[in-house]
Structure formats: structure tokens, C-alpha cells
Image 1 (spheres, rainbow, N blue to C red):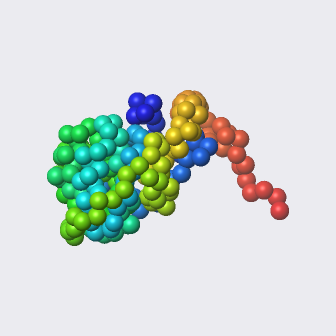
Image 2: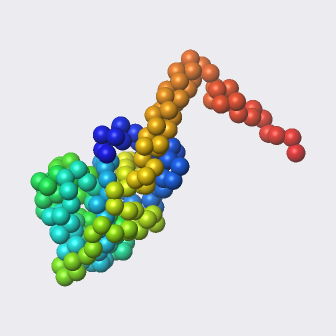
Image 3: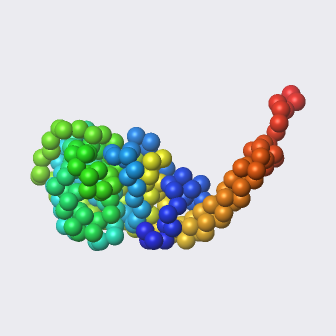
Length: 203
């Protein structure tokens, strides 16, 4: 599915999807330039405990994105050790509604992480969590296999059953935007190109 995303931005996929949803803008890339795209492997955990994430890294298939509900807790649930382990397993990234740490180390690894908090506060390791269940992350319900795309603009979730039509619409949207940019660079105004009102409408 990562290849199927065709490099489209999160914003383009959001606008193209008939059912796509944008996560809370508070879920941000923890290092500049982080990008991810792939099918969700969902994790339901407990805030302040990261055993579920250790188990998820050992369980998730290569090519997946970990999407974890840690109850928005401001604890460092994920760091360098788990990022290295995830890369070794072929996991493509993490979207976590909670906190992470070791941001500089993860940037150096090039492992993309989107999270609500960056914090040094530690965690326990007692709750095993659940996998493969719907989770709510950033206010959006994410189901196993949904397409998750994250970049500098945020995180978007496209339901698995809507991916094909979304990608078709995204391709068409990008082509249309390229045509618009050609015209605008030639001097056409955006008002002219999109036939927008040039003055206030009459009351």
C-alpha cells in the first residue's frame, strides 16, 4: 500500500478521499521532514505503560505503520531502542497518541514518528495491550489496514475500502493543480483561473 500512495501528500489524500479523516493537528512529526505512508497496525495500550509497544514491534508485519492509542498520556512511551527494533523488523513508522522521547536519535535513524508530546517522563511495562482492534488516535477511529499518511501538514487516515478511489481522485487532483500552476506562472490570477468573485457581492 505504501507504493500505492504514489507519493501524494496528506493534504491531497484528505481532499481526494470520500471518507478520509484528518487527525488532531496536535499529532505532529517529532523531527522535521518525517513522512510515512502505509497500512495501519493498530495498538490499544494504557497511558504511562509501553509494554504494548514492545509487543507490537515483535508482532507487526513488515511494511506496516504502528498506530497506537496511549490515551494522550504525556509519557515517553517510545524512544531510540524501540525505533531501532522497529526498523529491524521492517516497520515503516509510528503514529502515537501519547508521548515519545529520543527525538534527535530517531531523526538520525530516519524513523518517522508522529506524536502528541515529546517528554522524558518514563513508563511502566505491565499492560500487554491489544492489537488489530479499532483505536481512536487524534480523534479519528483507525481500523487495521486503513491507509495512514503523515507529513509536515499532519496525519490523514483513509479507510481501506476507500483507498482505490482516493488514489484515483488524488492523481486527478495533482494533474489539475499542475495545470493551474502553469497558468499562474504565466500571469493568470487565481481569481481568473478559478472564476472567483472579484468584488464583494451585492447585499
